[in-house]
Amino acid sequence: MKIGEVAERTALSIRSLRHYDELGLVSPSAHSPGGFRLYTEADVERLLLIRRMKPLGFSLDRMKDFCRALDTLGAGGGSAGGDVAGGEGQGARFDDDAATTISEIGAEATERLERLRKHLAYAEEFVEIIDRLS
Image 1 (tube, helix red, strand yellow):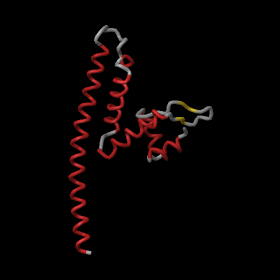
Image 2 (cartoon, rainbow, N blue to C red):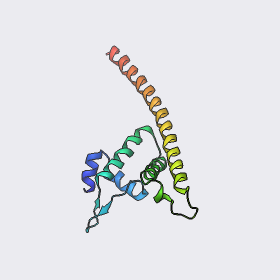
Image 3 (cartoon, rainbow, N blue to C red):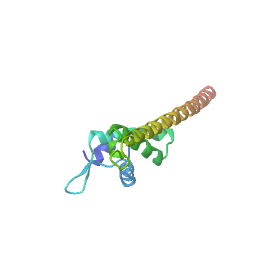
Image 4 (cartoon, helix red, strand yellow):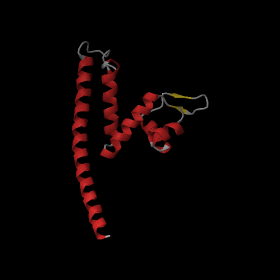
């Protein structure tokens, strides 16, 4: 699917999608003969994951770390360096690193979510005060 449809489905701007592509955060799986970016369902899912991380305030670098860790675990560690000189155990080390990254980001996400919930509660209290004054 083309970038406009992806933007509509993900509620991300075309500008953001292009920026993510330039950074290597989420790149389209293909390009048309005319040079249009073409995205797959897997690409859209990755973009939705990024969109879910945005409200939690994760940096683009941290999002990239998370995506890289997901890719490593999804590939069983092999594509991330399992065939590199160093022999057996190399893939397991990459799997451990990826699992650690995901665990760390999960803990960060939980902390950030709790902070957002606290801020939301303050905002709700404020709106209630305004409603009582009206």
